[in-house]
Each structure stands twice: as structure tokens, then as C-alpha cells.
Amino acid sequence: MRPMRFVTSAFYYTAAISQAARFVFAPLAAAARGTKADEAGERTTFTSPSVRPRAACLVARYSIAVALFLFATRCPAEDSLKDVGNVATEWVKLRVETKRLETAWQEEHALVESMVVASKERAEAAEEKRDLLKARTAKEREELDSLRAKNKAAAAELLVSETRLQAITEKLTALRPKLPPRLSEALEFSYISLANPKLTPGERMQLTMTVLNRCAQFNRVVTTGEDVLTLDGEPTQKSFEVIYWGLSHGYAVDRAAHKVWLGAPDTEGWRWRVVPNAFENVVKLIAIANDKADPDFVVVPAVVRQSLPEASKN
Figure 1 (cartoon, helix red, strand yellow):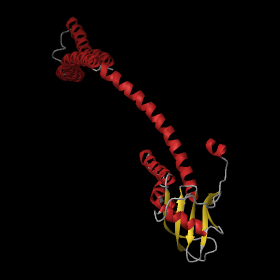
Figure 2 (cartoon, rainbow, N blue to C red):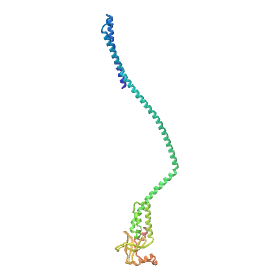
Figure 3 (tube, rainbow, N blue to C red):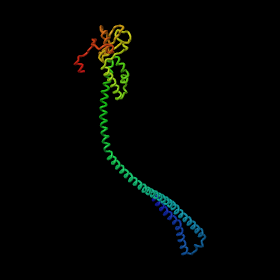
Figure 4 (cartoon, rainbow, N blue to C red):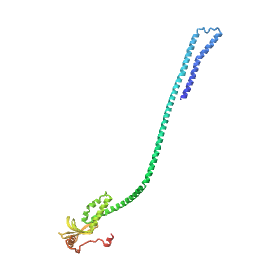
């Protein structure tokens, strides 16, 4: 854009100078030609009354031409100088900004390089510390790996044990209706706790062992006492004198009515039924068990639901 303005200004200067030259020197040349003609003739031109107006006209034309020339040469030059000044100012500003950016980049580049070197040194130090810690803790890590493997195996075994324990709990719950009434009532709290699904394996194992131990203990002795029972042929609950022969069977005696009931587990649970002609023998059996009579052989009714070979297999 600026080269075109410079070319336009130069063209404008040339045209202005040419017009001014024509405007000034054309009348001078004509005046010179007229003066020479007068000198060749009678030399009366300078005394002519028209010389003064012509000279005044020439001076006026010359003054106008000079003014046009100065105006033509001054205005474009001032505009060009302003453009050049603006360009120079912008260039100086650009140069200053470039220098500032270069200086800032050099300073920041040095800082970044120093940070990179420091980061590399810290990384190397951390790697050395890591290697040292690995060497020092190699034995401990091996022991930890061994413990993890043992814990994993123990967790698998615990899961198997918990599954088996749950199966035993279900069998004990199904066995309760077939237990003697006295033992079933004694295990009431344990069975209620076993029914809780939120029990831990340890708690469930403890309760299961409690039930099994109580059953084993009850099965090893002959137990006598009084129980409140609901028996066949009786309208309401009533207190009876009882004797249990382990977990296999038991007898209930009503001394007022001279009746004896034989109790034993069947497919539906523990069941009592009347046994005729056994009152005297059962009363004698109870007396011997309570140390109120001398030991003797007593024949009492009993129920055997499976043969000895089958019992030994089971």
C-alpha cells in the first residue's frame, strides 16, 4: 500500500512542476519574442502603456505557480513522512517486544532446564531408595506372600467348613422334634440362636457343639424327674413322673390313674402311647434309678425300630 502512495506522490510532483513551468515560462517566452521584435523595429515596446499590466500579470502568475508548486510538493511529503514515522514506530515497538520475549524465553528456558535436572535427580534418588527397600524387605515380602497363600487356603477351607456346618445345623433342627421333651426344652435357647442367619461361623460352630454335647451327655445316662406333658388320652397338660433311657425311649407314670406311657421317636417326632400291664415294673424301675430300691432286673416294654447290624452301620 505504501509503495503505491510513494509512486502516486512522485507522479503528482512531476505533473505539478510541469504545470507550473508552463504557467510561468510560456508568457516569459512570448514577452521575450515581442521584445526582440520591437528592438529590431523602432524599440518603442518598453514605452508602450501595456508593458506594466503584462509585467504585473507575469508576477501574479509566477506567484501563483510558486504557491501551487510549494503546496503540491509539501502536502504529499508531509503525508509520506507521517507514514514513514508510523512504520518506524511500529517496527521499533515490534523489535522491543521481540527482544523482551527472547530475553524472557532465555530466562524461563534456563529455569525449566534446571527443574528438569532436579526432577531427574529426584527420580534417580527415589529409584535407588526403592531398590534398597526391595533388597531389605525381600524376606518379609516372601513371608507375606506365604501368609497370603495360607490365608487363601484357609478361606477356602473355612467356606467348606461353613457349608458343612450349615448342613449339620439343618439336620439338628430336623432332629429336635424327635428328642425327648426334657432335652428339647433344655435346648430351646440354643435352637433359637441357631435360627439366626447372621451368625458368624464361629458362633454357629459353638452353638452346634453345645447341642451335640448336650445330646451326647443325655444319651449316656438314665434321667428321672417330673415333666409337664400332653399325653394321648389326657384332655390337658399334666405333670407326670418320667424316666428317660437316653435318647432311645422313656416312660411316663400317672400314679393316681395307675397308667404308664411309653415314649419313643418315630418318623413324625417324639410320641407317647399307653402301655397296659406295665405300671408295677415301671414304678420299680424308677425307684431303683432314684436309689429307693435295691438293684434288680426289671422287665419293661420297649420298641426297637431297627436291627443291630443296621444300627451299627448307621
